[in-house]
Each structure stands twice: as structure tokens, then as C-alpha cells.
Image (cartoon, rainbow, N blue to C red; front, top):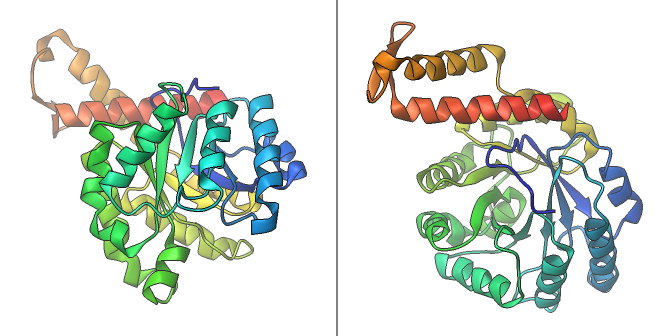
Length: 294
């Protein structure tokens, strides 16, 4: 299954309970960009083994089309983590998502564990940022991407709120620093960064507002707990037509022979650097991937 492109859209990342075979079957037809088969929070302790088996069968069977598939395992220091990791390697999703990571050393240990289990080179590693220590160590966690298969950070604000006693209020004012730090760390080391879940899936207006906030902060997409949230997340995190038009203009301008080798040029009267060219290429690629998947 490991055929993900470099510029895959991840606007909507939907958690699917690993123990629910019907939900996993339905996931094959949902318009989410990323499906996270969850063996952790969504599965009771006495159902862990059955969920692992169901997830293994569903992921190995495939049929998810262009959707990216991740398996969220239990932490390796739990009774189920090692078996979850071994199963995930065998099932061959696009990546695994690991909870409760707090430092860069843990990322390196996870990478070694994947190698020891025989993971394919393109099986990516994602980690949950949901503990106070993780916020304090964001720089070293993200920097571990340089020598590991780490590809993404996923915010877990429910656990962070529980661990810190911070109230999860509308607008997430108390989490602004943590949210921004996660994006900064991710961008500094070339990682995908996904915003946390919005718990009230029936509150569409509140959900859209939080998606807009997340996009404004620089997140690539939103974690979801219900299929009803997919369309709004896809809409908010999709590039706007004006953005795509501007990006294409930047690419075309740098391709003009007279601009070859230049680090800074003018595009529509604005100073534009090579870093803007790379951003433009990424945005256009994501836009085209979205169009191809629709």
C-alpha cells in the first residue's frame, strides 16, 4: 500500500475504531484524505486483540483507493504496543501513528523498532503531540525526522487538556502557544502537522470555525471523529482558487529563461523568492491531487 506521493492532501484525517468492522468497510467509500485505524483510545482493553485482528485484515485487504491509511497503535510501553507494531508492519499501511511520545529519543527508538520488525523503507512514522513534555520537547521531536522515518505530528488536545488541567474552551486560547509551537517545529523540519479533534460533531458552525483557525495557524488538516465532519474539513483546508492562480503565476515566472538562476524576482508587482517557488509547487501539487481524487 505504500504508494503515497510527496504532496498528498491531508485535509481530513478521520479516526476509525479498529474494532468496528462495519466502520472500516464504510471507510473505503468516505471522502476523507486520511483514515486512521485506531487501536488506542477507540478500543476498550478487553477488545484490543480482536481490534488488532480486524484492523490487520481490513488494511491488508486494501480497497481504500487514493486514501492514505495510518494505524494508530498503543504506546510501546503498554501491554499491546509491541504486538500492534508487529501487526502494522505486516499489514503495510502508509504509516503508523504512535501516542504519548514525549521526546526525540522515543522517536529514534520507534524507528529502530520498525526496522527490527522488518518495516518497508517507505512506511512512515507519525507521532501524537498530546503530553506536556511533548510540547516542551517539540524541537527535538521534530528534529528526529532528519535520521528517522518520522513524517508527521498529530495534535491530541483532549489528552493535553487532561494532563494539564487546561479547560478546552471555544477559541482554544489556552492552547494557542502549543498549537503554534507544533506548527513551527513541524515546518522547521519538513513535517506534516495535523490539528486536533473537535469533539462536538453535531456543532457544524463551531467545527468550521476551529478548522478555519487551524488553517490560519498553518496546519495541513484536521483530525476528525465522525464522517459528518469530512466535507467541511475538506472545504476549509482546500487551496482557494486565487491561491492556486497565484502559485501557478509564480511557477511560470521562475520558468522564464530571463529569470533562470535568480533568487528573487517580481511577480505581479510583489517580490518573490525561491522559497515562495517551493511553496507554490507544493500548493499546486496538492490542488491537482485533490482534483484527481474528486
